[in-house]
Amino acid sequence: MSALFPVEIIRSENLNQIYEVNKKINLNFLNSKKELQDYILDIGDTLFIDFYPAKEFSDFYSINEEGEIYLPRLLGTNVKGLTISELENLLETKYSEFLISPKINVSIAIFRGINITIAGEVRYPGSYKFLPYQSSSIQNFLKELNFYENTSVTQTNETGTQNQFFQTNGREDEDNKFNKYLAKNEEGNVTTISDVIRNAGGITSSSDLKKIQIIRDIPVGKGGGKKSALINFEKFMDDSANPNDMRLFDGDRIYIPALTKPNKAQVPKSVLSGLSPRFVKVNIFGRVNTTGEFMLPLEGTLSDAMDITGPIKPLSGKVVLIRYNNDGTISKKKIAYSANAPRGSKRNPFIKEGDLITVTNSIFGRTADVLSEVTAPFIGIYTTRELIKDFQE
Image 1 (tube, one colour):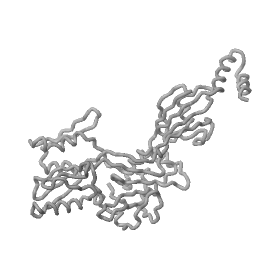
Image 2: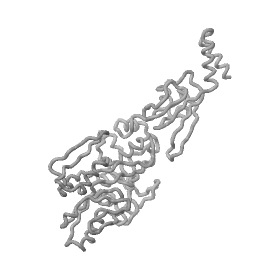
Image 3: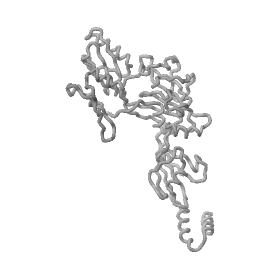
Image 4: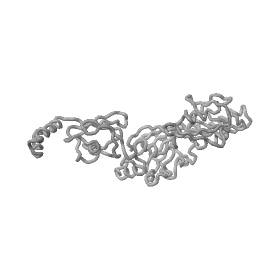
């Protein structure tokens, strides 16, 4: 995975987006090839700490709710906010009181679950959570501790999730606590820009993918503040293995600016590339033949919903659209629906994930039905239409 930040980067000299960014940043700092050197330790991270010469101290240590890890001899040690190198230096200093020339290496065995905020031109801006990520080096750490033999057992639970259990060499049950930790915690994958965009409902026709802004906290030991870079993400839709789909960490923020002129062609392209979902779920009730939850194409409109549910004819009255807004409030709109109105217009709006649509009854609708039933045996369709028209007037 590419480091912060990848090759194709545009430096921003005038960042006037929604975040205040430290502009006095060395470009080499943004182009760091060691993406973990500035990783800020926090609650939920599980560390593998290798001690030399005291190998008996080597073990897995989780950062608790107080931001501490409990270490031999030192007991509670606050590590929240430190980087890996800062923690290594701190421990080597503290353990020099007990050990001769201690050498301590810290690795992250399990990264805490991460929370990413995305704003701007995505369908559903907001904050999104992702599962913890287990380092691929865990088996090497376990080998160092002699936790398991040459084989491992993979079991599948009721949900279909696979958990790996390592064969131990007779160590006490308390020493096998990490094995139990792995078994009970669901594991996620490395989280990237594309993952967050997908969770936020995909892009819009106004998303400027050439200037996606990534904002990350700078460790206090390096002055604090924030660093930022602009990523050209447009090529992702042609090549999903594009190196600019960089890895993200807890607390990162994404901002996608708007194009000066919408590009409607990029939405279908994003669907085909998997950056945007193919369908959205909506709930439809009221004066329709079939009620319930339906799947509509991304950027589907009210007319698409009516076609799927089969409104009772003649369709009349108002359509009520209820939805959650980006700020968390709920809006309720009465729409004078027209199947012939342009897609995306006020009378035939685009539908969003989670919308609740209700087709209401009206005096005209009920009267029209009554007239059609009463007059059908006596007069033709043309005359019936004229009666309805006269009734309206």
